[in-house]
Image 1: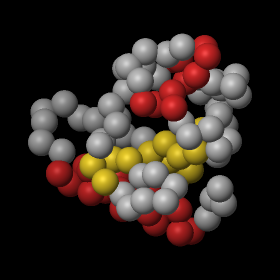
Image 2: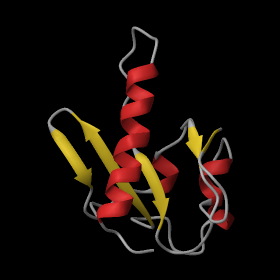
Image 3: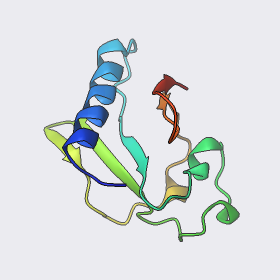
Image 4: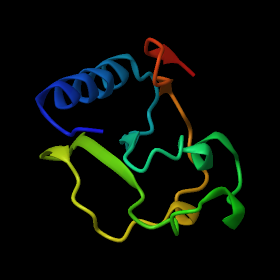
Length: 103
């Protein structure tokens, strides 16, 4: 996947739309996660982590985009481990050949 201006605009729009429609007293910590290893991100479609889900080692194996607290843009690899992200909640999802839809 090519990380560029088009992806930047898409992910920023998705996160801004989510923040604009968030109705809770709890501030969300939002991140747009995208596939960079062509694994399908199966690890984000389950409620608990299993080492069998990840053939890439589970560290910095996905792209991350954030727009909060003074930071806007792609997050460089920083040692994020998939198994430490649980629980997570998918709000929007897009398949490779589909449109963006609410999860």
